[in-house]
Image (cartoon, rainbow, N blue to C red; front, side, top):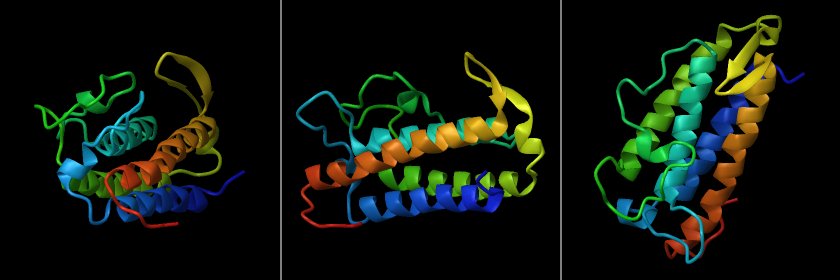
Length: 162
């Protein structure tokens, strides 16, 4: 079993990678679409943020959704095709992601190995232990964090972050 502290550290590491991959990019850079079915960096980071809000909800912690509208970034949402209404600025997304990490770390600190075994549903899926959903959603988080490397390169950077 992964320790609670390790889980918090893993999520924080993903945040640090997002920050490194978006460093030096403008909001306009974050809206660049790849020439095939995909989504832009802005959507990917916003989607990670929406995912983090789902995790906060699973942990019975306050998520950011009452404060910000993440409709553009939800699962199966339409691709972002430019600076349209409801698309958050890249720097705002990063700030919100940092806040979500603080809330996530605080919420995880309140958990115990035993409490992570409580059965909870996630969306329309059957109940599983909270630890299962945290691991599953970390995989999801990491999947999208991996996309940031190619999206950075699409913005014209020819560098290696990791």
